[in-house]
Image (tube, rainbow, N blue to C red; front, side, top):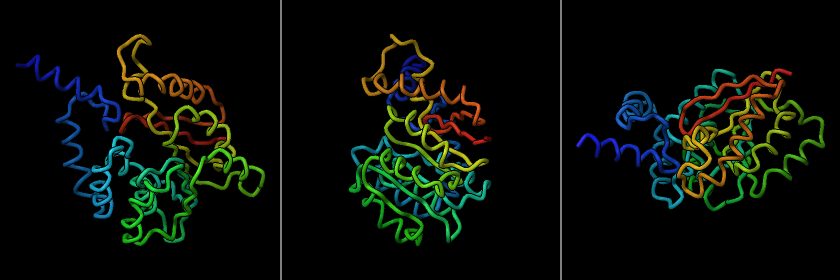
Amino acid sequence: MAEEQQSSTVSRHSEVGHKSLLQSDALYQYILETSVYPREPEAMKELRDITAKHPWNLMTTSADEGQFLSMLLKLINAKNTMEIGVYTGYSLLATALALPDDGKILAMDINRENYELGLPVIEKAGVAHKIEFREGPALPVLDQMLEDKANHGSYDFIFVDADKDNYINYHKRLIDLVKVGGVIGYDNTLWNGSVAQPADAPMRKYVRYYRDFVMELNKALAADPRIEICMLPVGDGITLCRRIT
């Protein structure tokens, strides 16, 4: 029986998108029920429930990560922010609620339909005025922004949860857009735990395809002298990069 329970836990944690790398589902549930859910704003709970019914719900930011981002934004007094990869907007809503009333978020995603699924909740929460949403690939937008020197060093916080094969390309551009002392957060940097597994280990195709890109990013960030980094086992792993030069 114990072996069956252990096998069941392992199988649950092997699914891509499982929102915690903790090896105990019970411990993760304890964190959610004790610390996260009691303090989760009603609008975020509503959006989380809506997203759970979407066929791509594995893409959403976990509730504990949303709480973490909210706390971080307040600690660094963020005001001008950017988000690349929005989906239905759970992390975007967490950011919008954490920013002051005159705070701004440039939000980019290739799929407006998913964003509009969560937009009514964001509007009802009274924070839609903080968001400028742009549909389409982010790289051309970033290149255009970099042409204007006024955009250099203008962002307090940038959150990236998009196509993993472009994370390196995002970093090359974002490092000039975030201010010295500002923070870039890269999501999914532990990629379902696959980054610590042998290359020939059994993995879902989706996990295996992006694994090398995530590992490439992790090595590049660790070697980048322009930033201080901290990799955290929150959600599927998030690496914070604080620009120092």
